[in-house]
Image (tube, rainbow, N blue to C red):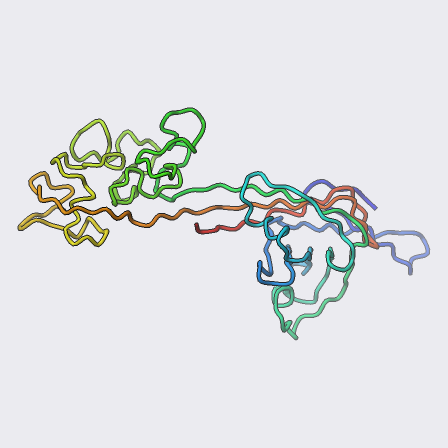
Length: 295
């Protein structure tokens, strides 16, 4: 037997047919990029990792319930906890196959062309999970650069006062033109000093409620009131009204375009004191499962 806390752990397989006491050591080098079967509408979750040459898998099964559902969509970060391997509702297996196991693990009707050749199940162990998440509005501005007051707290930076912090607000100035469409970082180098600034004011367009400084709020230059400021032109104009200083007609719009952001959730699974017939380890770093959730 051996102890492992790294990418590799060892199975020490005792060959009962050998009279000289020789042992065979097999290294299982998994990539630790975990996949998942099941969701909150399933009876169980299965977290797994597979490899080829040879075909092997590590699988962790546990029930879907209100507590475990929070592992993948917590309300706070970090979120952590544990549960115990019991051989029934919580199971941990190491398996070998005679082919690619991808058609076996998650399918209700398993592939008939691949078989499990060896199956070892843990009798004891504790599963620890640590969930963290990062929210981002995908507006072409890294979240760390949306800390306007530079106090290290992204939650208190809300340029347009709509109750949504800039880092998860697709429209930082509330003018109904998405921030990413106001070219906050034209060359994509992370330096916002060259952000588009149509009127040359102190504020770049993505933080300016009147982009062309014509005295009409940008949001009120939406002539057809469809939420798209780029399809409204004055007669013979080549620039949309909100960027045309000569277009000064006002079309009052009190509606805000919808807002969404992406939450990237990462769950690190670690198994402690696992005991399988041919494996005993203090710590197995099973790996990380990652999922993007649209909000």
